[in-house]
Amino acid sequence: MTYTGDVVSGGPGDRRDLPLLTVRKACVGTMANNVYLLTCAGTGTSLLIDAADDPARITSLLAEGGGDLSTIVTTHQHWDHHRALAQVVALTGATTAAGAADADALPVIPALRLTHGDTLRFGDITLDVIHLRGHTPGSVALAYHDPHGHSHLWTGDSLFPGGVGNVGKDPERFASLLGDVQARIFDVYDDDTWVYPGHGADTTLGAERPHLQEWRERGW
Image (cartoon, rainbow, N blue to C red):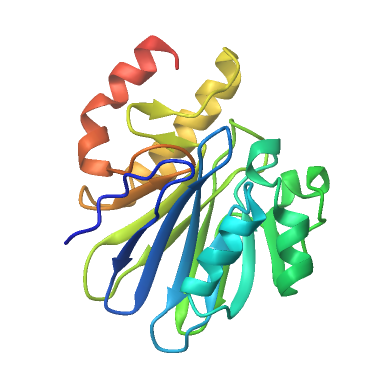
């Protein structure tokens, strides 16, 4: 596998070819947000995760995937994850989706209000919706279960290499987020599950699992 997931804002993206799904990762904007384009290998239909910034770069990413964009998912309401949302929606007419509790805070009110256990389908691909409460009330992650390999998770700002997302030093929010991440991710998915976060490098659950107690003790 040549994919590393190591991308920088303004630089080239990276591409990962799974048997049924192509994953393209790019980094945009001053906050170095990751943008992911998932393309069904059988139909060419795509789903975009976080139209974070730089509409021109996202447009070129869509062109790499063939331009048939079905859905845009915003992982959570924070401003740096939706700065290009209105422009990309206007350009593509794609259906928008976000967690129900964050939906009204977005610049484009989503057509689909996602809750835990929902599914999203594009082409032949189905993604599971995981609601992770804490970084924001409506943060969602997306899971793809590769029938020919391991699972893949797009976690927004709820799970990174080295810990969960920022909760503003609020112990209740931290307990909520870590509880959801443990119960809804670590207790469900295997160690070889690949994690694609909202910023920075990718990781696996196996790399992070040994540190769960450390995160709990440090409180962030």
